[in-house]
Length: 328
Image (cartoon, rainbow, N blue to C red; front, side):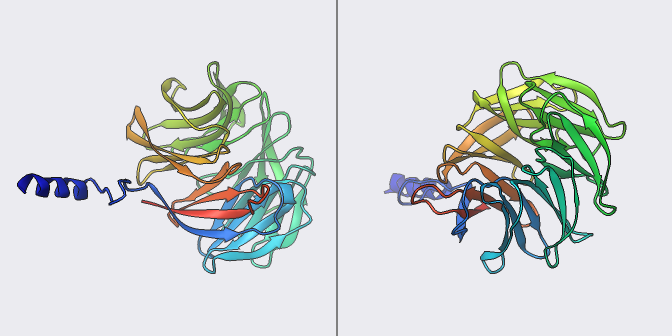
C-alpha cells in the first residue's frame, strides 16, 4: 500500500497525466482561419497595443491583418507583389511592407491601412528589422545589400554591401553589430551599423542553407537554423566560434528565442515545431516536437503577448490558418 502511494505521488510530481503524456511546452489555444488565402506565408509583425497580427501572405499578394482580440481576420491589404517582410512601428503607427515582387518598401498608415508612400529600387526586398533604440529601419534586398531606411522621411539613407542575398538578420542591443545569414555565400556577415560596413565574416562550412536566426544578447549566443543538414547551430556572438549543434526537423524557416523560459522555437516545413531548451550557456537539448501541418514553416513569437504563432498554408484539403500557442 505504501509503495503504491509513493508511485501515485511520483506520477503527480512528474506532471504525467492518466494517458501517460507529459506536460507540453507549447499549448495550442486557438486557430484562426485564413480561408481563401493561397500560397505560402512569410514574415509576421505584431501591434501589441492594438491586438493585431500582420501576416505577409506572399503567395496571395496580400498582407492579412488578424484581429487577435476577436480571434478572426479583420482586414486584407491587397495589390501587393510578393510581400515578404512586415514591420510595425508603434510610435509612428506605421506599417512597413517589403515587396519582393516589385522591389519596394511600402509604408502604410496603420490606423486606416492607407498607403502613405513607397521606396523603390529594392530588388527582392525581404527581411525588415528595427534598430533597438528606434529610428532607422534595416531592409535586406537584392544580390547582397542591407538598406538603411528613414521611415519618417520616407527615404533610403544608406546601405551596406554584402556577398549574397541576406536572409534573417539580428541586431544586438548592447552594441552596434548586425549578424546576417548569407546562405548563398555560405557565411554569416557581421556588419558595423554605424560604419555601415562588414566588420567580419564567419564561414558556414559544415552547415548550409542557413536561413533563420535568433540572438540571445544576455549570454552572447547566436542561434542559426540550417537546412543542409537540418541542424541548430549555436555560435559565440563575440567571435563566431561554434558552441553547440543539434539535429532539428527538416525545412526550417523561422527561429525564435524565448528569454523568459530559455527556450528556442524552430518552425519547420516538415510539419513540426522543435522546442529546444537552453540548459546552460553551452548546452542545449530538444524538449519536444510539436505537430503543426505540412509546409507550416513560418512563425512568430511575441514576448509581450507571450504567444507563438504558426502560419499553415493551403494545401489540398488543408485550409490556410494561423495556429496560436501558449508557451507552458
